[in-house]
Length: 327
Image: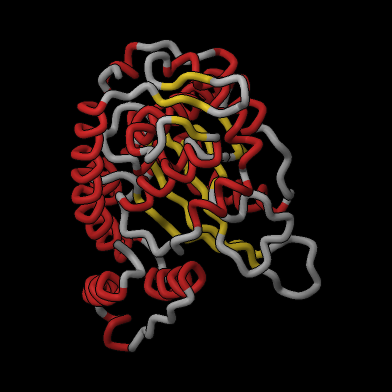
């Protein structure tokens, strides 16, 4: 198997980029565009693109959910009037914020809510391609929608970065497969399981399987089109399955890399949660809601812990670790 770094020197298959373009251009509810307009107003000329991802991707009704966006900017210095936010974003991307917009055309008050992460184009391209930790390439190997892009040059950059994320995801996770021959579902369940374990994420044990099944058609096409970039790693079989061409020594090295990613992910998750306490409005209530939604575990938010969000984050993380909700 070639080294992980060799991804950087390999061309991305044109068919994979075309598949990404088709997937990213699928229609979404017009409600999402209300939030996009708010982001355009927030960042002005510094905004390069807006990507929609996460659990609301297939929804036609935003309801009480919180939409997940990535706002890609050309410069942290231009994106923020507050200099310290630019420094925080450059130090540990992304910064995460909360957005709430009143829905137009409704007689009763209705609000759309979103969580948006801010990352520069440089960090986005590096994070979907060169970062050791899977924080960005794991997220954007999965389906997303490009809801706004400043121009066609930026669009090409986005599509290429998303395609690279798929290749990085597969090449990095394939050595952890338990079987040398696997179908597409098993390949993606394995990859999602590995990347979830590399962050402090409150996901049910069945989440990877659920996502793989929901998006199986998309993952089948993505894997097929990514295969030419995985020569020597993945071989397509006539029955639709794949053979993983990975030697024992490479598997052992991959195991050590994923152990390091899990350790690194724990540290980065704590740092990002701490940072979000200062950038994300009412981050405590949102975190408690998300934990209960994803795991069924209700987390109490006391007045004292609301006043000290960093302390709350450490306490809850420790409780969830002890209960095995996050690992």
